[in-house]
Image (cartoon, helix red, strand yellow):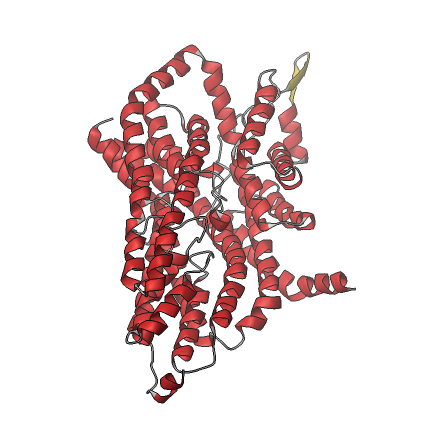
Length: 259
Length: 292
């Protein structure tokens, strides 16, 4: 991987980080640049193979399709999944579903980087407290920019260094796996197909704390499994069901809960 | 206070109100920390408003800065309804209304919590999975850039419009009935959005997960594939069981995501080695994902 390629990917990783403001904040960064689907396209552009990039992006995205970060708790670090996992998988030359297993590992490692940042940033909040006591609005505004130092180090520089150093190794490991242990690559593919179940399970858990709510999930599942309803159809049916629930079922549930 | 009532009314201009929203949209998490979360960004966002209201009163400015440096956390894109309400409250306060720190902060907190819940199930829980699934479906198999581009454009337009609208809504209706809504109404809305989110999650789950068994029975010339039989009875049953098992593990036994990943790995390895589990043969992964 050329230096400019690693630098660009590092830059994308930084721009898409949860705490980077420059491209529409969380909206354009975390929820757009860092989505594996988008990262696949950008990585493909940088590495000169858009098609492979997008296909890997889709496969990896499936695992993290329902990722929610409630209260700043990041269950898996998408920054490193997208801008270390996807590029290194591309360099290693593995198939899209095999790339999933590789990316997931970076998601686990990356959580440490996030925790370091979100705990360390408390120092900035204390600085803000001091400025607030002085009535120094300009000081607090400045902190919002200064806090980018930590984000840039962990999300820009660190991935840049890892990509530069790791690309050669990833290539060798990729070749070795495919030629020497083919069953392991096949297993990685199977794993890649099943891992989205983890993402979906997290999504249900976030939306539905109560056991009885699982019925709605099952309705969506069988609509696709048996009736092959396309995605837009699922959304439309979901909206209609939500309206029925809002108007008729919720008041009933409330009444039974009170009785 | 008495001084303020004598002065002519201070009003936040449309331009200042919009500038505050833009600041928040870009900087909402830029100085995020576990301890105070989005507080520094909240103060930055309030800057154009506070300058207008308390610009010539250092004492009031100091109080306002301290008032808004308290813990604040919500879903950044939809929680802006709280910011609109706060802007309205600060404006009334600057004009002499009897609004104290506690009232402002309790209203802020009363909105930020429920909006975090609604926002999370509405945006990353429903809207984003739908748009991602659509984008994935467009590029599936071909690897064309159209899917990611569709996602980028559609998400940004939809979410920025929603966010701006909610902010203005909060400012306009700010103080009237926010508190009552916070009690009962929010719960009902959250629960209804959960229904939508869960149905979408189920649909997408059945589309993107792949797990099958390569088991087959042969008797003489006849070979019966177990998966074919399963497909006749309940298609996508194995991935459903895996998903529900993981959900149960997280819900009742408190598995973290890493634990869930590890368990999936182990179960699949144990199933794969003796040839019980495999990929969906004959059906390439993800082709089930149809858009229209």
